[in-house]
Amino acid sequence: TSAPFDATTEFDFKGYLLSKAESVNRALDLAIPLVHPKRIHEAMRYSLLGGGKRIRPALCIAACEIVGGDESQAIPPACAVEMIHTMSLIHDDLPCMDNDDLRRGQPSCHRAYGEPVAVLAGDALLALAFRHLVDLGNYPSSNPIPPAIFVRATAELARCIGAEGLVAGQLLDIESTGLENPVDIDRLEFIHLHKTAALLEASVVIGAMVGGGSDLDIERLRRYARCIGLLFQVVDDILDVTKSSEELGKTAAKDLASNKTTYPKLLGLDKSREFAEELLQDAKSQIEGFDPLKSAPLLHLANYIAYRQK
Ligand code: GRG
Figure 1 (cartoon, rainbow, N blue to C red):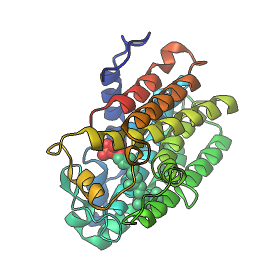
Figure 2: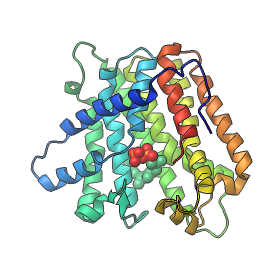
Figure 3: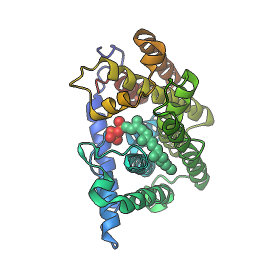
């Protein structure tokens, strides 16, 4: 499938993603110096700086920009969400969870550093994420953000990742694995909205908050993020079916073996594609009222999630 032509086709999306990833990678590198005790800081750096598409930071920065903020205001929250994403991957790979030896083509954190250090590296990244988000020293002094915004952003991030967010999605996913019958569509949607969409939602929402977005802006962007979060998983499921067997990665093969419920299994391939298209259109409709130039990154991020090939 090729990306649709629209008014923003001229926008250099690859360049945008690359430049935001570079800014975030620089800030992440500075955020974790190799101080005592070195081993924990090494493990944190190993997982945080070892690749990744940086989709959540890009969403955070793009949401800040769409409401009129600038990149420098969004770098600390963008780093915070990537720290949380990384800690969730470290913990997800542990033997007590998904038991994965590899992450992004490299030994997973517990394979490289041992389980105790991996658990602690995840814990430390979670703590650092919140510290980094609220540390005024990380923000440009020329464009101060009101303290009340930090309170709201902190609450938002905690809510999205806690027992009513990411953690809830992970638990239900674990409990649904290996069941003889597929889970129903409501449960599948709950898992994806919590396990995947919640952190995308927090990324977008706290980006819009630090950028000075109104409550209405924030709620429209929240809706956008939920749609693309679900879309991410629906497309993942479709790709698992449409990829040839040699293209099937280890994770997908494992999912098949564990009898994982997917959208194509519940709805069929055509209906799953229709659902993906509806989610994409819904996401795009949420950003229609914003400045067309400033909305190009979020528009292209939605297309990227919908039309990616892996
Ligand atoms: C956050 C408090 C807290 C606990 C974590 C272990 C756990 C609880 C949750 C697991 C969540 C999980 C692994 C969700 C999957 C999310 C997902 C879609 C990962 C792949 O994201 P990409 O493609 O990965 O953006 P890269 O490698 O590009 O960063």
